[in-house]
Length: 302
Image (tube, rainbow, N blue to C red):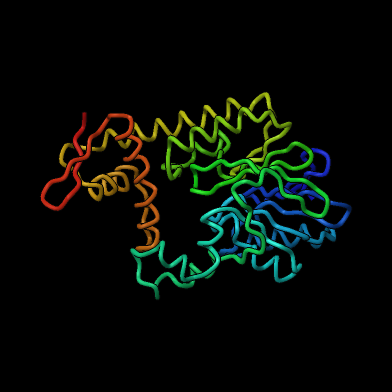
């Protein structure tokens, strides 16, 4: 199968066309999966199942890089089929365990409108990776845990026993990131630090969920391309800001001037949250300044 291939040694990759997932083969049939892709609409689920069934693979464990729905979407499906353990770290592990926890994070939309989506964003968690664990052992194989927050608060990258890093969304390939109008990081300063940490790890191979595989010689270029593109998008947003705008004004300008289509309230609030870190970054860089006026936080261009 063209969408299932060896990266190095026992570390393989499933390519769904939208996302790359790392597979570590404990033996011919037993595997550890790192991330499980998106379950919406089921094309990724079908692709994964086609590979697993075609190669008679048995999922013994799943490790999640972070709690976003395109990385944990098939956790419950696979856990139900294979009775495997799911490993997760940090605040996202707790948040995604129940619809109630997820509901707290999505207060901008009425529950009836969003409940079906929230169900698909939940995942059971069997093993909570602790902050002080540098390695986890799964059936005799050691996986190194590298803390790479920034894209999400508790994002981790995982190094397989073959010295292959599954970087998740801590990076996008430089070919993919330029397709995104507003690529997301919840905190730019932390995200940049994590990206450069990845480049310093000197792994033999790096699997980037969206979407590429690179080696230790090219990873630094990928990292700097990511950082420069995020900075360039921030500068475009800076150009949209006029004195006296509040955050809602800025978000509206971004959605309008970047011609981003909004199909529903849920997607609007998702995009709204994606713009916030850009505004925070611009203020931290001293390019804009926030001030309070008559019930609003407004911004001044410096």
